[in-house]
Amino acid sequence: MDYVLYALVGFVVILIFRGIVIVRQAETIIIERLGKYHRTLQSGIGIILPILDRPRTIDWRYVKTDVKGGNVYIHTKTPRIDLRETVYDFPRQGVITRDNVTIEINALLYFQVVDPMKSVYEISNLPDAIQKLTQTTLRNVIGELDLDETLTSRDTINMKLRTILDEATGKWGIKVNRVELQDIIPPRDIQEAMEKQMRAERDRRAAILNAEASKKSAILESEGQRESQINQAEGEKRAQVLLAEGQAEARRRVAEAEADAIRLVTATVKESGGDPTQYLIAVRYVEAMKEMAMNGNKTVFMPYEASGIMGSLGALRDLWKQG
Image (cartoon, rainbow, N blue to C red; front, side):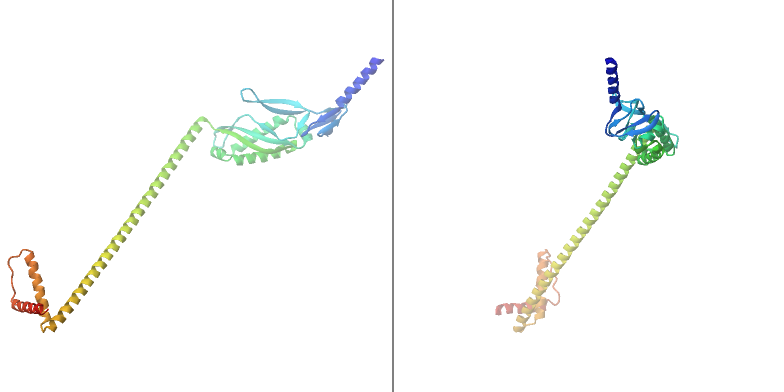
């Protein structure tokens, strides 16, 4: 009798312990009673009837890194539904573009369970369904684009994939937050052609830049030469102007000095009763003969008017005596 009592107590204790369910933060558990949905356990302590109530399991997938650094995908069944944002890294797959180029793409999908009940009852294998849907949607989106558009329109592809997947997975209780294309790998021959095209484009840009630099250099050099010639011409012009002004000033002063001397001589000659004109002519003749004598001319032709000149010289002699 005691053994039966102990067994009964032990059974009750086991039922009590099995009836207490602790749900961690950001997790939930779907409870079925007699095979039918009963309620959803939230975070904290939940009480169930161990015989009548049973947690409903859900297919889930985890990604772990092996010793070689590769990703290992682990599929399992668990009664706990993770409500946090989850990342699915899909294996690389071949996709054909609109211009019939086969490229390899792998994508990252960020999603979150917003309705645990739908994620359990609306789809049988949630991870597999999400993967297949993502792969087919990716093929459809890439099939509408050329290779160049695919390589340059990642943001557009990501946005389009996110919109389509979010609408398709809404009935599963899933919210797709973001889709990212991780790698886009074209065939090897296409990569080599793209590299050659890129090098040719770089060479073309370098040639254009060199030509523009040479053009600007020639323009600047010609402008510099023009400015230098203009400055030189301005300098020469200014120098000639200054020289002409200096010569004019010198001639003016010489003329003024000669005029003063002539006026002085004229006044003196008039005071002595002589003819100033004859005097000046005699002075010019004397200067001319002096110049001819200095040039080595031995023959001197005396004009007929020399007697008048000699008379002027006599008058000049008398003037000097009087002075």
